[in-house]
Length: 250
Image (cartoon, rainbow, N blue to C red; front, side):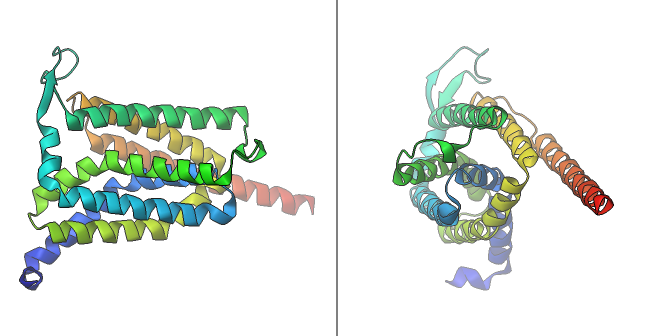
């Protein structure tokens, strides 16, 4: 425990927790959207259960860091027009299939919104199977995003205990804010469609990253934040107009 007597340890912990939260923003949005398909009384419980299980998986990956790092070693070669360096690793395969999963899932959710399908009106395929499906999706997506966060963690510190504490803190922050984000997205369908559109973009970015093609993430995240700020302004304008119209009719 002597490492906690050094200022650089706390700085590394603070920085790593910040990065974990930033890298988990996409995760929070996805979790909020998929959990909103469940009955309202079990949404929070399912979100928290999925996040806690995902935390367990991430800690397990950190404890087997040597094994995880082997995922960056090439498994086979492909033509250079497919992958930038001509080699595909285990990490690349996870990113490629993870990006495809995110694109397919987000497209399907947008289709539900456009068609006006309500899963609550569909025959109950058993509440347990729905909850299990949501939890599995949360864990799978967390594994996909875990590789970036683990590689970031290794670059910031060599202490496993610091990495684990940062993961626990970041998941705790996600649990606190995921409910509010989920409620906000459910209340404003236009924000949900916008978030799904950006999840498709992020899925495509992950897919390209798996092929070794670097995409400047800063530009994409700036576009996401900017678009969401504009949409929040639009929501406020619509609410004011609606309120003004109601007062006028009164």
